[in-house]
Structure formats: C-alpha cells, structure tokens
Image (tube, rainbow, N blue to C red; front, side, top):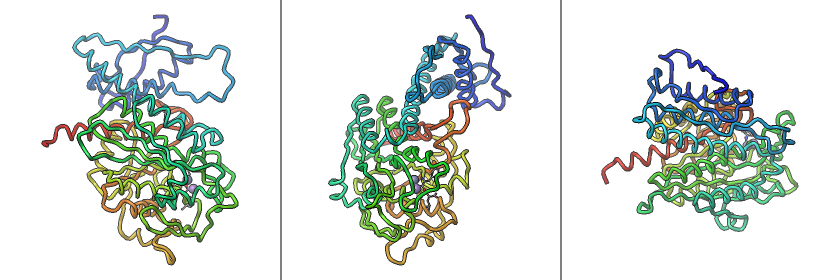
Length: 436
Ligand code: BES
Ligand code: MN
Ligand code: ZN
C-alpha cells in the first residue's frame, strides 16, 4: 500500500455498530480527499471490538457508501474529479468470510437505497415535479422488478381524493398518486403499507411561507422519496412478505384556483376537513393515502412525512418524531431504527389533544394552533386509519443535514429508508418463524 490510514474507534466498551458506520463514512471521505481510488480495509470493530462480523461489515459498507455520497449533477464537472472506485474488505479468518460478504452486500443495498432517496430529495423542484417523481419511481420499479401504478386527476376524482385534489388546485403541475407493489409472499393476502408525503415544493399555498429558507421546501417530498427508495432495497433483498408503497405527490402553490383558508374538503373516506391554514397541506394529502391503505386492507401502516415545524421545535434535528395507535408496531420501528443508527422518539397521543382539531363547520380542521403541533397533526392523520395498526414518523427535523459527519453529508439524509427496510426484513423473519 502507498498509504496506511489508522482509525481510532474510541473506547472499547462504547463501541457499537454506529461507531463503525461513522468511522467508515469519515475515513472514506478522507481517503477520497487524499486522492485514493482503490482502498482496502479490515472490518472495523469485528476484531478486538467484539462486534458480530456481519453487523460490523454491514455498518462499514453503509457508512462508506453513504459517506461518499455527493449531489453534483447540476455542477460543472471538475478537471480531475476525485473518486473512490473500489473498496476491498479484507478478512483473514476464512470462517467469517460468508458473514462478512452477507453484511457488505446488505449494507451496500441499504446505502444505495438511502442515496437514491437523497437524489430525489436534493433535486430542485423545477426538475423534480410530481410527474418526474412518478417517472423515477417507474424507472426504479422496472429495474428492480416491482409493479408500479401512477394515477392522474380523473382517477383521483373517481376515488374521491378531495385532500390531494384540494392541495393540487393551486399548482400548474398535475398531481400524481404513485403505488408500488412488492410481492415476496404470493400465497398471502396480507400486505403492509409504507406511505410517504410527496409535496415536491411547499410554498405554503395562500397561507404563504416567508421567503427566508423557503428553498428548503424542495425537500418536502422526502417521505415519498423514502418509501420509494425503501421499495428498491426490499426488491433487491427479497424478504418473504408483501409490501405496498403509496406516495401522493403534488406541489403546494398559491395559484388563482388554489384552496383558501375556510374551504372544506372531503377526503376519500368521506370525512370533511376544514382548511384553516393551507400550509398544513401534508396531512390533507396523507388523509387520502391513508384512506386508500385502509380501503385496500393494508396493515400495518407506516407513514413518513416532513409534517411539522413543531416536531423540529420538540426534537431538533437529532430524532424523528414517532406517534402511534399501536405500541407493538412502534417497538418494531424503534428496534429497526436502532439497528440503522437512525433515532426515533415517541410523542404521546393522549386523547385530550384530539380536542384541538375539532371544527365548527366540518368533521375536523387541519390545524390545532401552536400547542403540541406535531401531535395534533398525528391526531388528524389518525382519523383516516380507523383501527389499523399505524405508526406516523415526522421527519421534518431529520430529512436534511447541515453538517458532514459519518454517513451524513450536507443535504438530504435518506432517513428513514434503512429503518423502513430493517422493519420489513424483521417482520418477514418473524412471520417465517411463527407457526402457521
Ligand atoms: N412542510 C412543512 C413542515 C416543515 C417545516 C418541514 C420546516 C421541514 C421544515 C409543513 O407542510 C408545514 O408547513 N407545516 C406547518 C403546519 C402549521 C401551518 C399547522 C408548520 O409546521 O408550520
Ligand atoms: Mn406546509
Ligand atoms: Zn409541507
């Protein structure tokens, strides 16, 4: 070797898979900056660190592939761009080789899915319209062997999707409803749903947002990106379970035909929604997607959305807010997040919060005021899942990173793609283990 890099992993008793993931990301960027094109590495943490070799190898691959992510397609290429072309993972013990191979392969698939979500979320909104988001989901589905359906306005009208149509009214871009199916267990009638908010740009609509920072709202489709990208990894890993992803997609714009404060919309399940603030648009489009999931008997339902600024106030950019009507499914999500190195924190769904979204003119209103904004938003969504086990993930604070650290670089994080995939894999394994 021309160069050798020595990496400190900290105290032995503090070593976790995430230590390895972070180190791998930091080192990968460092060696790229040094101009290295081919790199060889041991599996950090699997020796004296005492981690299981498969887990450590997976974390290594995730950290390196995510850490090297760049979004540079709109920049003039450099003269000689620095690029790590190949990473060889070295394992001296032949008995561990299979485990290391499995870990590296799974880690690479998960990281590539996260990077796919990042590509979608980083793309400016003039490029990534609802139509383009649907086209990219279709292209991915073709390559991965998934079925993809993309529905237009007339279909939404037939379905009675008044929330999605109501938000789309102010935009010149046509809305899309994207459905992806993975059938890993054709004998079973059951399927779970992953639902993602797909606002390709959120101006706030008539309740328009201030100019400061509005450009960040190109990422308001990160939930949709996450569920679409998770399906790519699921298709590659082939677990024995059925999964359907739903992504309602539209811009939220203040056009002349836009929905106005005070307007009443009717969602697919028949419930009416008074629009107090047109900037609370995510819950309006999710109302229809969740109704659709229930009507198609998908269960459990996990939705992911950059839903509320209030969630950022509560948890900052460190943790994704999690709200549920089912403690068991939330436990599964928490465990899946732990394995991915993605943090989640539960916010309470006390009945008292439901009061805040009572409306005088409709079944519910779309904002509950400043108090407990993340929770009242979740209560709004809950109106559309009936008794179906459901977890809502509010990723408004975690979809984007301002710093470079480990697997993260500035821009979209790809959260919670790996958590969703881990959740699906663990469910498939549990079902296989359970007696018929
Ligand atoms: N997309 C925003 C939430 C958001 C804010 C995500 C900042 C990421 C960063 C959402 O549509 C929104 O505008 N929510 C409003 C709701 C309010 C009007 C009840 C909010 O949080 O201010
Ligand atoms: Mn909004
Ligand atoms: Zn929004």
